[in-house]
Image (tube, rainbow, N blue to C red; front, side, top):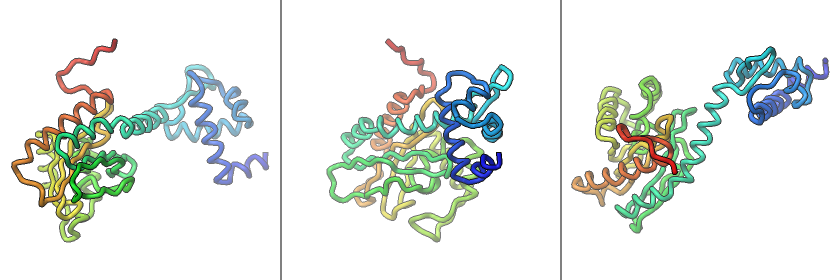
Length: 270
């Protein structure tokens, strides 16, 4: 027992055991009793019981209907579903992004929502034929408040999340002297929700114009499809056309992820 406790006290020991336990739960259909889980873990039932209760506290394990039985918890299912949906988003994005580029010959980027850090992250970019363009930094967390890549997501998050993001936000990446004015941002988010797209100038990158529209799956907003171009190539008369291009493709993309437009019936599966 002393040897077992010593091993469990080490960070590598407890992490290894927790990950093994999560694998056992993920591979189990329905619920399983303590002795079966312990046998598969190759650990004493007492140790397995302690590990299960650590995960119970976090929602990754639920009690089963039978005595001393357990199953994967709702939080485990939620996290797994989030990972699966986000893994699919970049893989499915290419055709919709290419349609944007074909329609406007400007750069299209896919920005994912990262809930843990309350940030946006560009994971893919397709460019038009213009040699003068902005190169998006891939896989770098960035603000949800400044720029179309973030605002197209932020406007469609729950109100309490928006509150948290605004409270924590710093100055504009393009202009450190420009700070968050919460009421102005909230008015802009209301406008984005009403019109269905975000439109920004020089908020993240000086001289850049951005358009974005939210991408949803069945659980909510997961990303934004964005157009970015230099200010020198942009004219206000282009807004309606660029907005229509990005909102149309974002809606089609969302439908491919299981989202239904309000008022539209579910697609029939052959």
